[in-house]
Image (cartoon, rainbow, N blue to C red; front, side, top):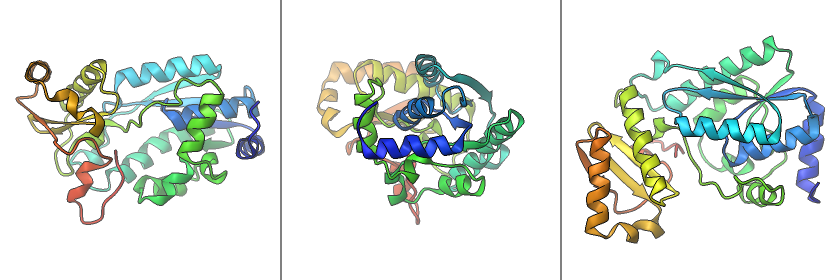
Amino acid sequence: MISHEKYSNLISYLQTLEKVVLAFSGGVDSTFLLKAAKEALGDNVKAITIHSPYIPKWEIEEAKQLVREIGVAHEIIEASIIDEIRDNPENRCYLCKTAIFSLIKSAANSQGYHYIIDGTNFDDTGDYRPGLKALKELEVKSPLLECQLTKLEIRSLSRELELNTWDKPAYACLLTRIPYGQKLIEADFEKIENAEKYMMNRGFRAVRVRCHGNMARIEVAKKDRIKLFDEEILDEISGKLKEFGFKYVTLDLEGYRVGSFNETMVTPTTNS
């Protein structure tokens, strides 16, 4: 066990919950929390992962592998796109979180678990996040937030715990790739998933492919933009994304930034 006051507080906090279900995405925060919950509660923790059209298949497979490595029970719940977000309203995150965590809560209650926990961290309180309202309404507990663990601390502790997610880039669901008001179509999620996986395989770890109908807008990390200033590479990327179903392929000159669609909103949110 690592010597760190906040980590010790986290273990103690988790032990008071006795038996929990963790909403598990396989990201930095939820993987770290699952590892800590396993240490604190042993077999009294279960991971539940939601599989929906806007969650990439590769992310589900990574989640399965991570849970196997940590050694806890795991359940995948299939979830369709709810009617309330089909037209992609600005409060989609709140509506989606409410629906998803209601499914998790129902499963947890039926299986005798005492609480649902999630990976919200202390830094998340610095932004406007409509999904947090849904979590509060459903009485979901956020141990990392309660113990005031920041993202930097979570990454550092994850590295000490030898979790290979310690330096994993942030990755939000594919809903955040589609502009508010653009109708949600499952075929678009498949195009986006294929395009982003292709870009990742080319070495762009932090990448977003925003979908504007039949046009793709590629965002890569600012430091990686220089890699794209090559005609051959641009032609290859354009050709590949067109194979995936896009008609036009563009590059966002500003590079990747969190919530670029929120720049057009009156009240910005923090979708990634």
